[in-house]
Length: 513
View (cartoon, rainbow, N blue to C red):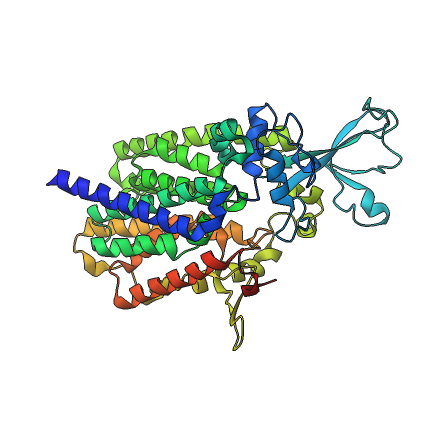
């Protein structure tokens, strides 16, 4: 009996993965035929393979003849990134940079002129990577002759970096070693997206076996469909591109971490997957409270009520969880320090050489960004017209309530379904898991609402991918049995997200700034 059940579950998981991959690939269509235009991770992977953490790529220009020592596909990737469909040069998007200069006294300095686009003394304010402010006139205060090829030139060089956490690039290193810049990041992203759908269904199946949810096998397929096609997962998964690839890979790693962390079952693996998730998407650092909550409140009750042995078990689980997190964290801190002289800086502060107005004036996180981010995250609605194009979506993206209307089903449930069980222990476990997911969701989502970017250039709030496993887990626990109305809302969510998957980046008439 159990063998048949296991075989049936494996078949169902495999079938769901194949269907998800097929739908993603079909809706990706022409984007599958070549790598995406944004090849930052391939660039980082190639340079790391050759012992470098910086890059010379932004020094190149479109249409430049390929050099003899170029890796395969390099100039083609550059042209694809720089040139739009109309042949217009779009420029380098999201490569970070800083200046390396030598003052006349011989002192080397590294940093940026945040107000170099201003006039007067403000333009001379120089911010070092170490956080110091200096006044430097680049025309008069610099030494000359540092470069033998330019004996009269000033000692002033720009260093370029890829401003993203490195794990996706590490994943791509074997592929880049084989195929250079011809690695198709679209297919790689699709594979992780399909795996995420399988992992989410596996999580639901485990909760059903544990009695935490009372959905039927058919209802669990409905929930998997909502996850795969009724959320931002769909449009984010089909295009490759550095930002979306990181979100999708981070989603997979987050799901693996939740699977291992629930009940604090496999704390070492939970820490490893979440650590790699942080090395992919830094907001996942805030998801690290989930396993401690599960360990300290086993079965929904405080661990200290279970006596000394229960406390020892919880301490052991926390230590095993923290070990891989600390190792990965130390590696990331070193990676950031070598590049930016700051263990917490991945480079976004230095986009456009530190001259982005919101960042230089308010930093990366500030309450001034809250209003716009709340709209993008929750309430942004489409514009409707009586003539063509009939509907238009802001490039700031639809809010979750508009892009995934199935979430309205959460408001129709007064409380966690106590009536689904008379077992007090089971009810305590269900409520404890729900509370831990909710607290972790808030921990991940709230810092993002203070971030200087609301996800601009998106169909719907793409940063919700960082907390999507938590949100969908809460949905499954709270809604439990799917009513016809809930299923209708899921179908509506799939229609909305399908529109985004097919039009975003393709049919510009449906989008406005």
